[in-house]
Length: 335
Image (cartoon, rainbow, N blue to C red; front, side, top):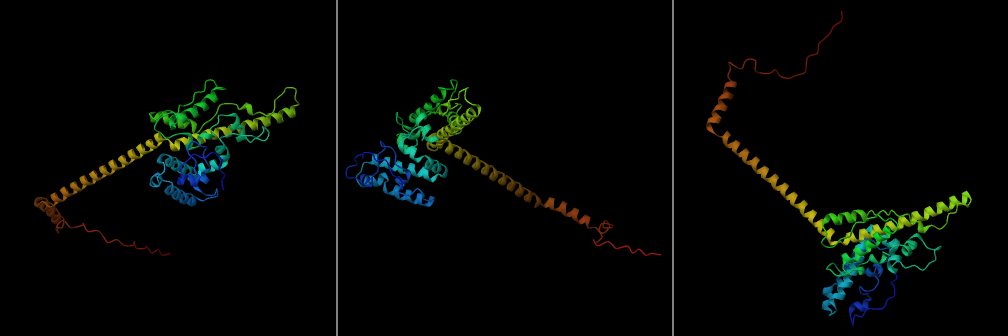
């Protein structure tokens, strides 16, 4: 099971939330598995079952019935929803499992340079983004410096600033605000979900290349430096891409766009069905009109006269077709 960071409790006087050990939003987030009360090996069905149980237990309405602070209960409920959204998504869960320790400690590392993994080096040297992989990073979507849009606009601006320190003409897409149009929002996510850093990542080199070094040593040092740069770059790019996906999944602007596209699709389908129904009605009306004309006495007499004329004995000569049958075989005899 996961071990949470030991942090000072926020006071919930005589509340069920305090007995259950839940932390408020001002604290560093707990492990998602601990929030739902499950093991790290839990199946999808176990995650769903734990989410239903926790949601019913810590729902703000239940907290109100127990006489607890609804706002604080809402924070706890959001923590449960955030944990569920992460773990139920197989891709996001896999990434969370690989970087869980970095997210929980906020990217702070205490190891020496030789002992650090590429992820730890990136966490120490690059923009610290680990704290943004949590609903504790922002307070809702309703405005204010701590709301969703200002917080993540600042986070991605730090990424852009880091790129501009080495690539001076680098221009990154702006995260925008709640009033940004869809073209701006789409341009941002198109860039950062497939983020490609143009930097060299030379700061991750372990060896200083000297022209006086023996050739075989210099080549080995260059190869090791290249490998370290590549590992650091891949790790950093993956972290930025994952943060963009994390935001996209929770961005109300994206949710509104999805709903708008779905509504347009439904409207087109309804219009197509209406046009098809109208066409069927027109065809039915035309068929009914044709039947009425066919039942007209004059039309019937003309048509009947033509048919009787065709059956006249004088005109029947040569009209009958021979019965179809197998052709007779010709018998050839030899002399």
